[in-house]
Image (cartoon, rainbow, N blue to C red):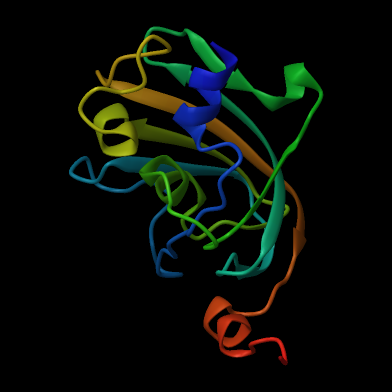
Length: 153
């Protein structure tokens, strides 16, 4: 079950977060796969590729089944934005987030994990509700710049 959950959330993978325009409203239209409610605004620029972010995350299915909770495990989760293939879940949940921000996100389960979800953890039906709190951000080099600097031979 733990490995299924790790696969579901992309734990162990780095991700690429998309930015929302600064003018984006706190709740997106019903036609988008995610609705964001900022509980506590963050500071600084939104996360960008190359940033290492440490966060607390809890995720529940629409019927209330908890499928992840870093606080209960006592282990915050750390990932680097943009290093590996992204799970759409991370792009939806972290889009436009800033250092210190806490937010609640309602995500369409199918948009986040595909048409099957992550059996046996959950099926892609309805929505997922995520609570995210950014604990720490270490700004990294933009990935294109870092990739262009090859080590000497």
